[in-house]
Image 1 (cartoon, rainbow, N blue to C red):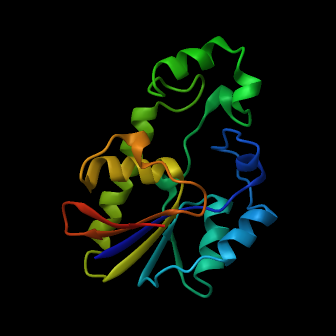
Image 2: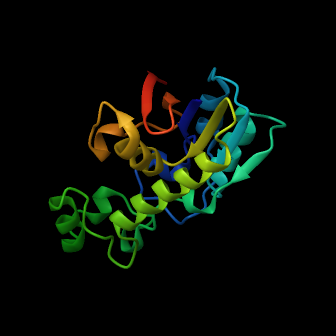
Length: 186
């Protein structure tokens, strides 16, 4: 099965390099404009995070296509870092500890990164069982969701942060039931 993993378009928080997780921001004008230039493959099924930025991206790229919402693809809860950028957090000792951990510590008053990754992988596995007879799927989700799934299933194997992609970009893959072969980065 061909699978497109695409990170949602830009929001104003993304432009300002803010940690935007549970904040349900819409796309900004630049994000909409950039998405309108994309040429992406068609899909037989469209899956999206419940966040506005993902739903708007789905509607722009796949007009009139039914969207299957997967609540467990919502973005990570960044806790005390939510809505702030690295400049605003530069004097925060919890932020420095998180950075020093390689991004592996739980977010203070937010979500544990391992729980976040597990939640995304379980949601992917559940959906793949439901859609195993489809010929193609598009997942319009968050960067962390893409990184979680690809870290687990992509070949060749790479670490979580090695799968980072910018807004409005992602990967086209081939799913064989156990692995994701990366065909193209978009």
